[in-house]
Image (tube, rainbow over the protein chains, first blue to last red):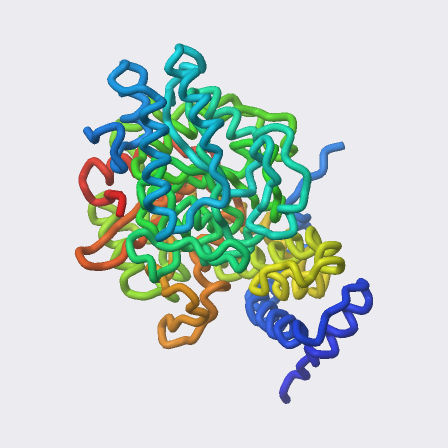
Length: 62
Length: 460
């Protein structure tokens, strides 16, 4: 069974709309390319399994 | 010893000559300004030159004021450091419209308090989101060793100015490799200190979680001299350590006795051109290092560094991306836009993984004091080159020149990038990595390699 891949074009359009970021048509293809590239580069991180007791690295000191 | 007025003079040599009265600081500044005038058409390192300010400061030093361990040393800073009276460009067109900085950045003030003289602001990749040294607004900084090639970035002007011999010392910033990459491609010594060691107050940020500032020079002594002058707690940078300053100059020539030195294997032994691994082998042989260690999950660390950078950097610039998209460098704009669209879940996971990875790597440093790794996967690509082939795989230059530096700055370890160069070839660097706050050990190794003639930096 092949895993269903996200439609990056839709992802870019909807997420940009959600945060109110207009993306001009001449920029859109390259934004999509960069999201695709990020998705590929992020894979080794997304594949890691983390214990529940691992809290985020930065510590806030009030 | 070099003539203190020549391009080969190091910062330490100039300081000794000025402090003993062998040469006037005004003559040193005039010589530097003349070299800059001659070299700029080729290397394009500077975006601002503060000649009048530098001449005035030099005259004051010659009159007996501002005397310190760096008396009369001309230096320049990446354009993300505040320079009083100038807008802090950070390599952008947009920031050039901001009001002028009211005072110098913290590290500029510290170097000048030690007697050094600021000459100007340096070209850089826009907003530091860059490994190439190219810039659509100000033109690319060009590699002095071959002006058809990249300097590396984002501290590209810093690399070019020092490698061309315009100034002996420059400050840069390193978020994912931006000191170490241009040091490697321009054949320089570069110090990325421990995260939090040096104040970032009065500098334009990129990714707060990873932003470091540090020096690039042509000798280890100059790194130590300037690093010692810049240490110390600063309440204006929330990440700045309150540890007492730990001077490195006094132990610089202690040799490598007692240091356990290993070579990074696995991730750091693949994904680069043969020249990158030959450089590591050359350095390892000179140090007698034979043990190989594995930094576990380095590929995930690089991925996490990439995600945090894209998302923190993207968010920092979101309002400017909305209001002035046309004024960004095209090579920066769409990457910053994309960073704003990635899932928040990735960011949180990256920060959780960061704690895990840090613990694993610190455990490794119980067995070793120094780890050697390539600085870049290859020597300088051609200007304008967007793709490169590594191990038969076609990769984007911008995203991949930092594959070996990212997993190290991700957890803030101190690194000295040391230069190697084979006859007829372009330079390429090696990372000498130490445990947190042990810059002194990495600098000792660098000084030893320099003394042995294995790592030498000469101006183009």
